[in-house]
Image 1: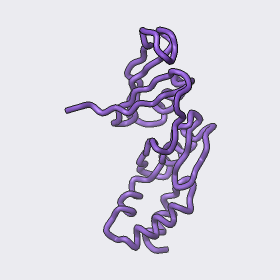
Image 2: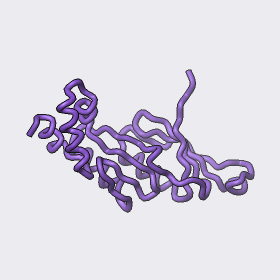
Image 3: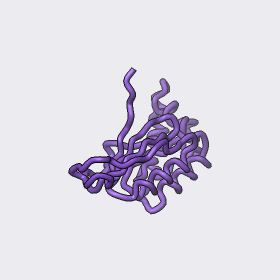
Length: 158
């Protein structure tokens, strides 16, 4: 079977980004680092840094190779959290020097978009009870950082 790997292009400060990501998300690590051994449009041999890393069970390849395209909402990393403490920890850790956005979204200081959501959100929003799904979706749309207690109340119809 083919291997699927997401690729992230950093203008600068890739090492700091990977350190933050891999220390905040359990089961994550940088597997390897190297430099491109040939001249490229992004710089001379040895200037472009490449790293392979995992976030949980997902594989990534990162490049630090100067300015290209900025990250945007078209690609984001979604993290399903088991409890509010995990949401809070990741929200503050990934959002440090970033921008907090509505519905559990944030942009980290490198511009990468993240969705920090409780695992139960998908069960409610995608479930068969469409009235419950509406209530939970409406509650979520009124939040910035997602609050499990508030979403649970909406799921119960309170």
